[in-house]
Image (cartoon, rainbow, N blue to C red; front, side, top):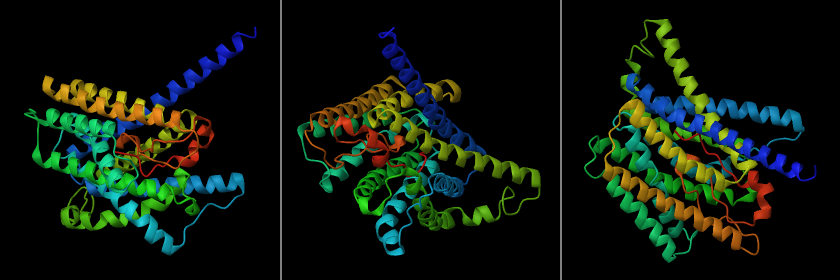
Length: 365
């Protein structure tokens, strides 16, 4: 009887982990295909992103209020100087990353988006080296070469390649490198008290909204103001359907961030990273099956090369974390931009504190 108890506990943990992974897959894959579907009929991706930010802020504020009522402890509220000096750069980079990613859906297929966005770890590593968050090692050079080579192969002579969409998503990946570097530096400021993802989302969304507004005003403001779907609507039912669709996307964005938080707090950030690799493969297979995206053998080989670089990066992080003899601050950044996480470089026994080291900026779209 004594031997059955550990087995039951192991099975329960495995089932729980699988359930959390599937929940994360539902939100992550769901919002990717949902945004692509929505942009086919609603050609205002920046406005869509801004509405998503508003929904995330609303749900974050509600979550903070519920947490404060249940714990009877006040939530952190930053002063204006700290807010503008420390949070604003991260919020601006995050807004541009998410906004450009959604914008690219107007021109690019889901498969090429997924492949290109997975290369964001390349820019994350580059900026980590620039800001001395990583030490230059031969293994890191190999990771960069694998990802860069994969990026070239899965875009070379792609049958559905679009230069405008590719430039947008590659620009998002580049800004994502800046974003996650600033995110790590923000996290290391323990005195700010923004380690809880709900608090970070609450503080980031307003500045993200304001940072994205000028881009929206220049590229979409005039067209949206004359659109019969929003400002010059004549059919109230159509307006409500459009707003309902946008609101549902915001719920998916918030759910993505929350599902990532649940997964990493119950397991580890490494589990979330590995799950993200399989998620990308599932996304490509679904895009080929449901949307008819054409992926050549060379594109698949390039994507496999890119994933091998990401996998090597994850393995190096795991070995580094296991080999550390003493707790250290965060050293590297997450290997996958769609995962919205930071890989930790601390002792295994620190897993109970993963919630404090996990950051959700916004549900990646």
